[in-house]
Image (cartoon, rainbow, N blue to C red; front, side, top):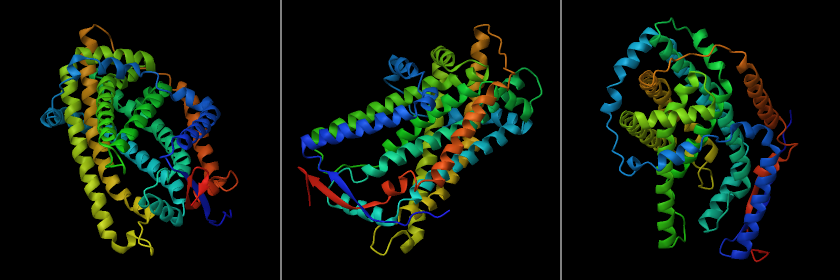
Length: 418
């Protein structure tokens, strides 16, 4: 198939110092987002956050005011149980390996659209940023954001299935039943819609939080604006932690066949009953993931350094696409540590705590066994994959190439270009 040649176009960037033009630009962006949201509503309605009440209820708990720092001993002390179960039921690490593979595939899929943006566009964007203008990437942000949304959605299906299968292994072990890969996957597929929806919502929240943590110091920021930005960031951190803490019981509840909303309610009861244990585990797990994340960031800096002149274009600007392609090296190592080793320990420990909790309230854990329920979800997953493939193949015809190849940054002020 023949793709369109790169043709430079002009971006009209609104000067955000003009309130009237800023408001016009905001309304236009809102209208575009509204039309896009309406078009994809048949798909997105299945993946909205129906358990947002977790974040609100846990976030209002008095215990959230003074959270202790994570102690790695609270996590590493659980390695014995997880490793012994992993050595006995080797499919656990297979499930972790498959999750790692799909995370990398999602990143590679996202890189596809990034690679469609020609280097002259990145050069123009850098010039725009260097000149102190705003909204320099506005035309690429919407399609890249939507593409990222679908990448997370596609990755969430297998990650959800394999996470549930991992939890199933624990419950089978507790019931002294033989655990096999097929048996675990059958139980996981029996609640595929709920696990897919939850892992998408959790993945989307996590990615947005990671992006918000990246170093950023906006130009022309007043002290009041900076204070407000830092306060908003602190609030986001609290709500993010409330989500991660409050949703700790969602996965084990879904493993036992409960739907998403019921699992959310069960999770709140579970967290309140086992708050101290869950808090220690989550804090320790988060602190270790922070260390892995910082190591990956340092690894990224080292990769760019080792790239030498290869990281720059002839004009002296960063070669963005190539850098992101090389970033897969530290990303692969970091996600391997998390998905194959740390995450299984966390999931198995949470499931173990959940087993103790339901035993204390005299509930009998019953694993679902109707994998035919997951067939419809699997076909929807294949349809979304096909939709993304069509976007890749027909990006010229749908005008995506034109949008992503816009360059020669212009600046609009009161209707005039300079």
